[in-house]
Image (tube, rainbow, N blue to C red; front, side):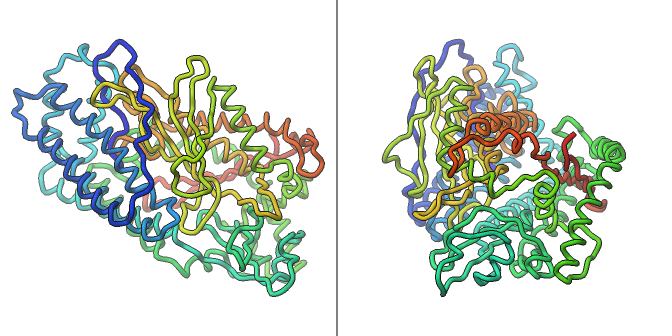
Length: 592
C-alpha cells in the first residue's frame, strides 16, 4: 500500500520544534494530479537509487535508514494529496484521476518494495551498526524493513522474485478497482410511496408528500446486505436513516441478486483469492492466512482454527437457541405474507431479524431511540468527551480549504501547554461517488521532518450518516453513534500517538506499527494497538446516552431503554484457507 508515515528518528534527546503547517491541498485539477504523480515517482525513485547504488563500505545510518525514512515522510503526504480524492471528491473527473494516480503509485510502491539492492544495503547496515547507537524506534524500523524484505521474497531466487512482484502488482490494481466499483456503484431498488410505507411499516415524513413521488431503497454493498436508505427521487438526497429490510418484505429473491447486476467485484474477489494463494505458496506459506498471521500474535492459521473450534463448541448451545428464535420470527412473517419459508437464516436476513429480536423481546424501538441522537447533539457530546478524556481542546477553523462544503476542519491543542498537536477533518454525510462506509484516513503523519522539525498529524474521518434537510434533522441509530465514537477514536490515535522524538502521530509506526491510511509498506498494526482502544472508547457512548436529550421530549434516554438493549449479534467470519469453508459464529444476541 503506502510507504511509511514516520521517521526513523535522529538520535535526539530534546523535543523538536513543532511546525503547525498543513501541507495538504485539495485544489488540484485532474491534469495536475496526473502531472504531480509522475513528479513524485521520479523524486522518490532518485532517493532509492542513491541508497541502492552505495558501496557497502559507505552504508551508514544517515545515508541509508534516515534517507529512506525522510523521503517516506514527504512521499506519504504527497501521495495522500493525490490518492485521497478518489474517496471524497465531488468531481468524478478528479476521482478518476485520483484512482489512476493510486494505481501508478501502487505499482511504484511494489517496485520499490522489491528493490534487492536497497534490501542488501539495509541487511549490511544491520550487521555493521552498533545496536546501542540507534534509538529504539530506529532499531525497530531497521528490523521491520528486513522482515518485510523477506516477506517480499528478496532472499529468494531472481525468477521467484519476479513472479512475486507481478502478483503484487496485480493484487494492488485489483484492490483499487474493487474499491472504485463500490464507491461509484449506484445500484438501487425503486419503490412507490405505497410500497415503501408497506415495506417499512412506519411513517415517513417526506414519503407523505403529494404525487408524483418515488422513493428509492439503496443497497450500499454486499457487506451490508439487508440495509438501505430512503431517498427522494427528486433530490437524490437521503431523507431517512438506515432502515432494516429483508427478503420477505421487499419481495426479491435476495438483495444479493440486485447487486449482481454490477457483479464485476465478484470476479475480482475470485482472482484476488487465487493470486493471494499463489503468492503465499511462493513465499513458503501453506495458505494466505498463514502469510498474514505470521506478523500477528497467533502466528499460524492452525492456532486460529483451534481457538475458533473450541469457542464454537462452547457457544453452540446458545447459538442454537438464538438461531431458533430468529427462525421462529422468519417463519411467522412468511406465513403472514403468504411466502415460502426456506428454514434458513440468509446473510440478508440477519440484520433485519436482529432488529426484530430487539423490538419483540427487549422492547427496543430503534426509531424512537434515534430521536435522542440528533447529529448536532451527538457531535457536541463526542467532541466534549474526547476533549475531557484526553486533555485536548478542539477549535473549528472557519473558512478552511476543504474538498466539499459539508467538510469541517478542526485544530487540536494540548490543553495544558496550548500547543497545536494536530488537525482533523470531519466528512460525515453521503454523496455520489464517496467512500461508502465509515473510516479514518491518516493524511499527514506527525513525525520529524528532514530538517529536524516535527510536523503535526492530520487525519480525516469519513462517514455516511444521514444528512439533515430543511424539513428533518439528522437522527442517528444507536449503532451509528457507536461507529462515530469508534472511528473518531482512530482519529485521536492518529493525532495523539508519540514515540520518543523520532515518530508520532499515525499510530507511531516505528514502535507499534501504523493505523489508517499511513503506514510503512506492508505494515499492519496489531489489532489491540488500533481497533482495541477504539472499541473501548466507543463505550464512552454510554456517557452520551445518559445525558442526551430527546428531539421532541427534551428528556434523557430512559434508563430502561439503555439497560434492556441486547448485546449486538456479532458475525465472526474467518477463512483459514482458500479451500476450507468459512466458519460463521454468531454470539451475543441476548444479555449475558
